[in-house]
Length: 59
Image (cartoon, rainbow, N blue to C red; front, side):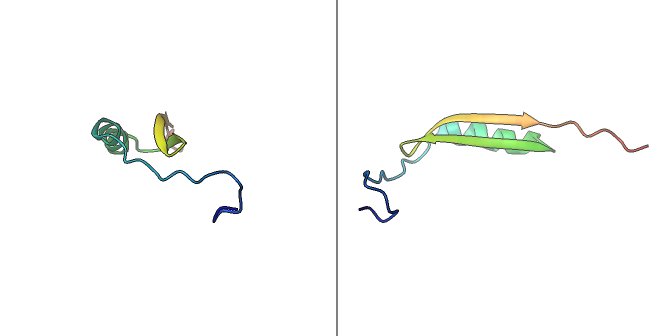
């Protein structure tokens, strides 16, 4: 049994590419309100989703 209590092998994470890091950094720089979700498969970053919310002024 692995350290996480599963019978499957544990994969070591792979470093994200410079391009992926640049996309995440750009999203962090422009989103004021929202979410940035990273999807990882077998230790590899495979998808970056950015959801931006627009806040309406209170009246």
